[in-house]
Amino acid sequence: MTSIPFCDRVACPAAGCDPVVCTGRGLPSNDTFFARSEAAIPGGVNSSIRGFKAVGGRPYIVARGDGPYVFDVEGRRYIDLVQSYGAVILGHAHPAVTAALAAAAPDGTSFGAPTPREAKLAELIGERVPSCERVRMMSSGTEATSTAVRLARGVTGRDRILTFHGCFHGATDALLAAGGSGVATLGLPGTAGVPAGAVAETLVVPYNRVPTLDDAVAAVIVEPVAANMGVVAPQPGFLEGLRTECDRVGALLIFDEVITGFRLGAGGAQAKYDVTPDLTTFGKVIGGGLPVGAVGGRRDVMDELTPLGHVFHAGTLSGNPLATAAGLAALGELDDDLYVELSARARHLAALLRDACGAAGFPAHFPVVGPLLGIVCGDVEVPIDFDGARRTDESAYAAIFHALLAEGVALAPGAYEALFVGAAHTDDVLDEIGAAAHRAAAAAMSRLGR
Image (cartoon, rainbow, N blue to C red; front, side, top):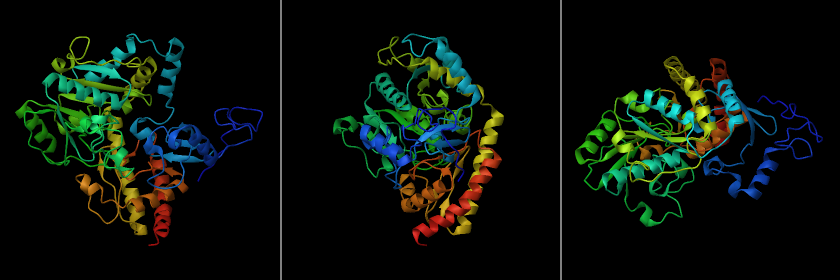
């Protein structure tokens, strides 16, 4: 593992530390800093999936990022395949994004009023995703999915929402009936604190099977590529079947493209699979790494949002000038050539990991959908639904996770997340991962006693 001094950039009286992580007693450690976090934050983390409960151990504490790397408070460098769970596609601290933020920040950080950049970002989304005739900005993917569901219910006058086992649509009560990675990582079927009434009109069915709907269904919401139970591609006819069935009963089809939007390509999964939803939710990439979300869709549906229609939505930070500046900068760097390259890199990394695990006798599959890469551990088939995904060997994932982390390669601390390859993961970086994976796979087998 490469290690560099972290506190060599900003002097302080203690020991040349960065003030952000300085303890006043020299360089901090991950363990001591996490203990400090635990004393102030429940579980020491501000998102449950950042905890190491599923893999064991204690998290490393990120001090900064640069391109494909993150650096912890001890100065250790990791090749980062988390990339803020897909929010960062260009690499950490990309010059175009940081320059846009530096230019925007002196003008103010929040106004609670319309700004030029939010209109420009909405226009750009609509240009690249034609189904989005209107776009409403908000502050997170969770807010986007909850707004889309409320809008669908308001437009149709119906209450029932249909979701799929293993798909995760954010931490909103009505959609936590049986979520994907965020809930599955913790080994929970749902979550405490959600009353029965909140999910009484949420029907959860198997992914990759077209359900028969009735006229009580307001909307079907789906991850067009299920990236919260590993990476599970839609089977031929699945998305087309959902479109046909929704049309048959007058329900709306919602594509949750918080992960796939602007990552599978400029037009997202709907362009890749040539299926047009009524509503699309976005997050992650469109904020350039800053908190952002959006709902886009048919004009007649979107215009039912207040102040034009009767479906309420508001948010003081919606269309935040810094988030929209970063989003415009990030999307401005994404073109068709880059998406071709990202897909090639994902396939390259999958092959490297497959070879490394094969050489060590570590059983694993690495499904690839465009630039999205998954990992399925154990002697199991590549899953096509959540039942298949849950057959992954979580103890084997924990073993390879820690072995790779020791080699300076960071995966998400849960067996149901994707691996995110971005523009900063050059061939040299991928080859470094491949070499580390050979050592890590052998170490994981030893850890498992096999």
